[in-house]
Image 1 (cartoon, chains in turn red, cyan, purple):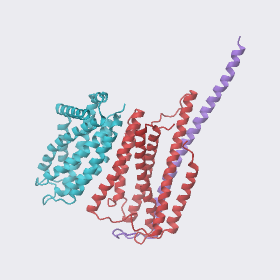
Image 2: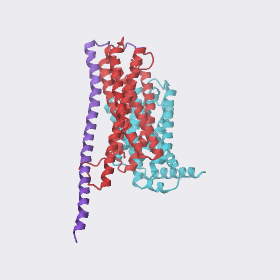
Image 3: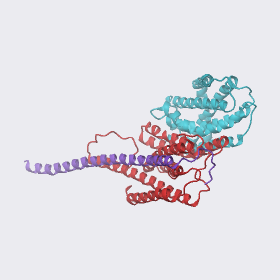
Image 4: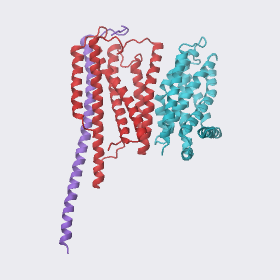
Length: 240
Length: 226
Length: 74
């Protein structure tokens, strides 16, 4: 049952997001160099970290799928990647806004984390055309898992390569999260990170519950020998 | 020789033989690359290149030619029913991966043997950087062979097989291109080959190769289960 | 936080506020769009369940009626 635990999870998510927002605007000190614009950091960076962890989770679920043959892992992998791609859109847009506010351009190539993220996003964006071009259900699930594993291995390699490319040409013009954050900022950041992580988990669970409900419907329909609904035949992975 | 090594050699021999026999995509890809150089000459409005521009033009062209060629190889194989015949044989699937990747590696090396001298002829003032460049080429080809085999083996079973292979391979090859171009840029500098960061870039390339060879080795079994 | 002050100086508060608000608005909008999509899915599930319930009831009624007919027909 996918829906169990969804209510406490959502409540916890709401509470944490409220806490994170409050801390961001009422508790965290104003940054000396960047000013108020730095507040975007508490939104953009947690989203990015959670999206990346989500992609890695998608790869882990894919490994479980290949090893066990149980299709539910394929559904988990698909939803994890799907959610991370959506979070990825938010990362890129908020990153652009931050860049515009900090440097006057909507996009910059100097920020290696943002550039790496773009490349990772482009990689995972190919997941959908790849998946849906394979017609046989079983094969589609298997190949999607191979993709998820390959792409998961790609993520750290990509970050490393981009970082090396940037450091040889431009010094980092602007340090993001790592190291040297004063206590209040670090605390706010960690709460924001937890809030985004919980949001991701809640939305993934929500999506899986919806898929499961559709799957049960199909099952019921088959058991009753009822005629098929007027909707289109769905190609997305099912949960039953 | 263990059965899987025998199988590996047999498949490798068959692949190389079939490529030599057909010789279809290799000249076409070489031609594609050379024509692309001409386009760059006019697109950039330059008659000689060095440093970052040289590395960029060379690697962009090689990457696109390789990706298109890889796709062609696998599609041709599928059309000839090669995949089915091999699937029926009771051999270790990973030997199949190794054989295909090796055939692809040889293909890419031969392609570069033709294309890189032409590049030097068209754009470079001195061929001094070419010898160390060979090391970069070999390592990059290994990476392309691993990812190319992995992705194309899946893409050929899809509806949009001509599009899907290149579509997925391109972003996957970005770290490889970053490292290869990064290593090549000082090698092709105006004043003669330089080696800034050379070791570091080669290490990244080697890591890329290692990781994707391992991934291919681990998952190839699941690709052929039918 | 160790920032190298290479780059534009900090924006004045009123301008900066717009960018920060913009970023949070983007996040909120994406979240709400997702909720809307989920709502549509839920609607579809409800509609199909209703159809199936009607269908099942109709069939149950038909089965109830049929044995009676067999008994009454000689």
